[in-house]
Length: 146
Image (cartoon, rainbow, N blue to C red):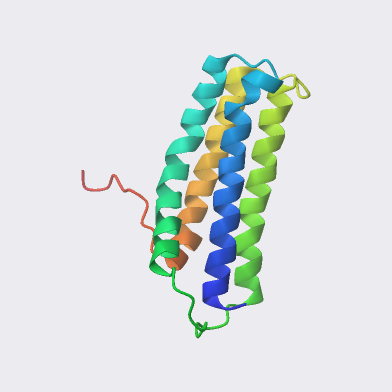
């Protein structure tokens, strides 16, 4: 897999998965009878990070909108594995905890699921700092020196 095809595959999978989680949360009052206030509260945890990295990924896609021969370098199998594994795990764990809360599979309260999703989003933010920064020239906002 070349670097450009890795960017495309990783970028699309991350955008699709994150938007899917956001939609599952936002529509939960319809299918799980979750209070709208709780659904919106959880969406406010997910949306800011989504907006940041989606901007970087969309910027890459709009810059490379013209089809050209892919002359980028091959990426290692380890890089591909890491690029897909962590977001995939975080996607499924986030869905598991949210649906476990919304459908009462796990018998956990709202504050617990909010803390879990916040923690998972923080882990994803760390992932962005390492992998997406190199792939998509994304630089997460810093509070250092302010």
